[in-house]
Each structure stands twice: as C-alpha cells, then as structure tokens.
Image 1 (cartoon, rainbow, N blue to C red):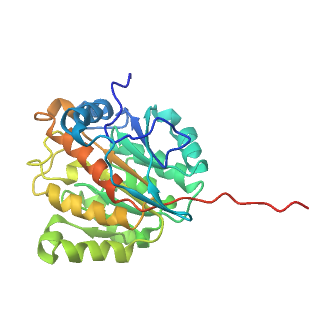
Image 2: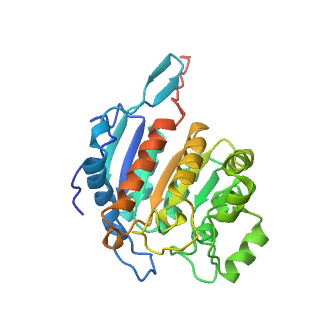
Image 3: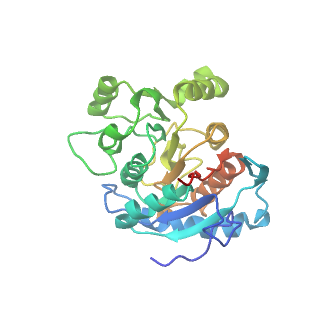
Length: 296
C-alpha cells in the first residue's frame, strides 16, 4: 500500500537522527470483524493529521532528557511496513534505540510487536486500552486472542487493561485465572481520573508498552472503529491517562482498529492523530549512551 503523506507531527527527515519513529502497518488479515477497512488507517490518519493539525507542524514542544541536558525530540515517519516485516524492522528500532509508535491495522498486530520487543527488553508492563479484553484462548492468533497470545512475553502483575466493557465469559475466566488488573469505564467514573491514573502508575513497572484500540473510546467520540461498543471512555479521559503514562516513559506504543470507511468526517482518524501528537508532546525520552570498551 502506497503511503500518501508523512504524519504532520514528523519534524525530522533523518531516521538516523530521530528519537521516535512513526510506522504504519496496513494489515487486517487477522481480524474477524464484520466491518472492513482497518488496513486503510495508517494513510488516513496521516492525511487527517495534515488536513486538521498541520497548523502545528514542526512545533511539538517535546523535550528529551539526555546526559548533556535538554534537546528537542526528533520524530521521523518511517512509512508503512507489512506484517511479515515487523520482526526485522522492530529489531532494528530496538538496536538503534528508537521509540516506535505504530498505526494499525487490526489489534492482532500487537502480538508480533510485543514479541519483537521482548527479544531485547524485559519484563514489559502492558497498558492495554480496549473495549474488549482480547483474552480468548479457544481460538488463537487473531484480534480477539492478543492477551492470551502474548502472556509469556509480558509481566502480568504489572500490566493493566483499561476501558474494558464487553468481555466474553471465557475472557472473564482468563482474567481471573491470570490475575491481570482491569479498569472499566465505570471504575473511572466512580474513582475519578486522578485516582485511576495513580492506580495505573502504581501497577506498572519501568518498561511500559502502550497499546491503544480506538474502540476503548465511546462511539460518540470515535465512530470509525472496527467493533464499536457503547459506554466507553471520553476523548478527554483517554488523553489525560495516555499523557500521564507517556510522562513516566514508554518503550513503544501502537494505536489500532481505526476503520475509515465507517468514520464520520474523519473524526476518529483525526482523534488518533491528536492522541499521537499528545504522546509526542508528553513523552519522557532517555537517550542511551553507547558503551565504550577499553583497549587491552
């Protein structure tokens, strides 16, 4: 699939000089959704970002904390890759100390993304925003079994599911069996956003991967998703939580299940672009200093 534009948040033309890379993965091959079109999302989000957010192009106020002080974070749009290129590409990102932000595609893409990270960084705390737990085990290797498929690759005690409101009985059993914390939209309303954020940050460890299914949002805010579910998070609630998580540092992020053919005036693609922009503005980034070896 041809890439139409770079996302407007990209402020660097050099992969080598970049700190964060934006990468599209236009694949929905492991989706069982009746709604089709998630593979169109990476390019659609890029186009929406340029149409609606171009006024802030190259004005991201992100700060990288390095051993030499503060410097602007460099963001590079890597373009699109195929599903089969994930392992090789993300091994390169890890080797080069890049933080990747991926745009899918269906949520099953998170499985190879997580697996590629664990080759180099562990343990991983997963913060998984979704209307569904994606915790089926009777059927594997699809967008409904992501959590079960990646169980060996995450630290269950320091991982959190956020926005869950449409679990199947099998998924409830797996949540109870494996002891992963769940925060529903009702929990957020009852306990408040500040307490919710504190609960997430108290649970997670130092290596946090953020996975964001756009259907965690209420369809009033994000109508263009593969499987919309009522009674979801507001855009402001999601923004506040994602910002605070990013401020404490993430090793990577993906944003999945945008379905442009079912969107209204690109509301969902625009919201996805803004979420990415807000993460870029909030993220804490620590550059790795290359190791020096003494000569014998």
